[in-house]
Amino acid sequence: MRKSRIGVVAALLVIAAVCSDLASPRPTEGPPQAAPQSRKPVRPPGPPPVDCSIARCVALTFDDGPGAHTERLLGMLRARNARATFFVLGQNVGLYPQALRRAVVDGHEIANHSWSHPNLTGLPADRVRTEVGRTQRAILLASGRPSLLFRPPYGATDATVGRASGLPQIMWSVDTLDWMHRDRARVARVAIGQTRPGGIVLFHDIHKTTVDAIPEVLTGLSRRGYRFVTVSELFRGKPPLRPGVRYTERDPQTPTPAPTRTATARPVRHG
Image (cartoon, rainbow, N blue to C red; front, side, top):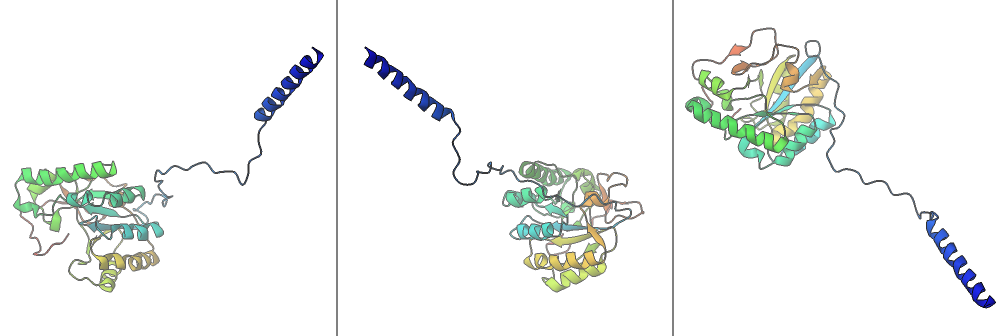
């Protein structure tokens, strides 16, 4: 009987020791593991807000994308902490949705350049509304944000286009003609030499030579004291941009109403 009691006590001691061992924290082997990080893209710190009534501001704008060179361009802009405005074609949005989302994350502005780049002055009002409306939906679906600005293809507009688009019409004060002269050095020279405070510069990010020129453009304009802002930032502090009205730059003059006569489009793809 005594041996039996001793055996029971020994068994209980063993069980207690095992439970105590399981309850005690075990030392970790190797360095502590970092908590998994979220894969959600995070917007990098951008430049502080700019008062373009005081600062030398310029809005760099890129038409006809997104395209094969857009993401490379975004890398250049991010490296210089520069913001820009992309006037996109609706039919291209679905081809390069990642580029569009990255542009939004980096703080750029996405704007409407029609669905398929027709001369809108040759279309009835319902077709104009379709071109603009389809692109509005594509931008919202891809980026999660609505477009607030419109640039008519070729810069061709009239009163019908202005009314049917329902958005402010953003033109330009500097045309680099990069679509015609596929010359990196020329694009940079024109952009730097012709830009004035409050200007809007027209490029096309579908051309490799244009994207190749952007580092030189950013360097040259930065040396002249320019700050790179979106179109909406350029006009901040002024009266709100009005639907159907054309804007070419930030200046003290009254914005130009849409012409009643048809604007002549260039014979080759532009704007």
